[in-house]
Image (cartoon, rainbow, N blue to C red; front, top):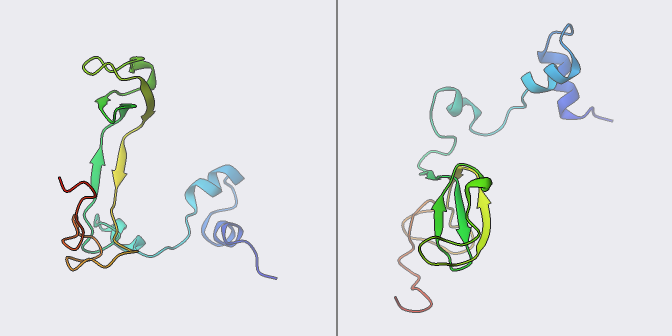
Length: 119
């Protein structure tokens, strides 16, 4: 029976004088794109990553940037909509995997689709 991957990596890559917790923090398995990250490149060639600041989201779809949930008002100050949820800063990657896109798997928009409400 094969050892779990973390155990194999920790035993091979990390000096034994470190604690188990230190070993687990410093030993990372290989994964696709890891070599690109070490060179400062995105792990998926051709992909464009987005960013979204930490924000409070409200039930009407509006949002207000806020560094912590404690900074969120119970209602949006502009629209009056009730608070729904908060999230920390996000990195996004959109992939077209269920529907073909002639602009590519990482395309921002798909010319083959139209909005459901024709806006």
